Amino acid sequence: MLDAIRAVILGIIEGLTEFLPVSSTGHMVIAMPLLGIRATDTPWRVLLWVSQFGAILAVITLFFDDLRRELLHRPRGAWRSHLLAKLAAAMVPTIVLALLFHDRLEPLEDSPAAVAVALIVGAVVMEVIDRTCRRSGQMTIHDVTLKQAIWIGAIQAISMIPGVSRAGATIMGGMALGLTPRIATVFSFYLAIPTMLAATAKTLKDDHVALSSHDWGVVLVGTGVSYVVALLVVAGFLEYVKRYRFTVFNVYRVLLGTAVLIWHFAR
Image 1 (cartoon, rainbow, N blue to C red):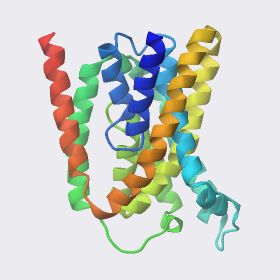
Image 2 (image 1 turned 90 degrees about the vertical axis):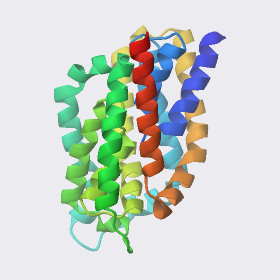
Image 3 (image 1 turned 30 degrees about the horizontal axis):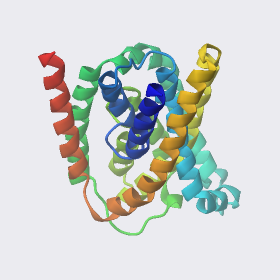
């Protein structure tokens, strides 16, 4: 029963933070010690990644019609103008960099102090980009170029560091490359689908044998809760970025990071 409650709490955290620029993994790493669990232990290591699949299902649900239309339409220009080509191109540097560095960065998943530093540093970088690279005007997802997609995919790999935020890295990366906040956010949502599906598949491939029936229950509960909560967050966040800067998230990151560092050193 206690594990089910923990899974619900972590599912809520994941659903709330996956698509906000505050780092869902970082929040999970911070929350787990407070709940008396370690991020590197089964089933929590699996839940850390698979619960993100629930949040991705929320994006697929909310953007299903748009995704179907984009993926099935025949582009007027070359193949490189198709959304699927851009997502595939973005995944190449993400996968290559993940294969090279993921194992080296994995120990940070059990370090709230490292997460706190990444939260604070990331907030500063995000604020600078938001103030210097914010563009206005009309832009659609078709305006994202193949080159921009590749660079966003490379920037996404930075989010392997817990506390950086996959959403924050890809949205700010898109803005720095010339996209409007809304289109950078939409592309970030779309790119999350293959990225998190790949991460989920790898996690289940590596760890499914070690999961007991009880562990599977924990993972499914957390993932289901993540899906429901993410449904409520995604649409609201997309409307927010069209009107406001990201300063509130940056302030939150700094306050949270500072609090975690104080707690860490006080122990």
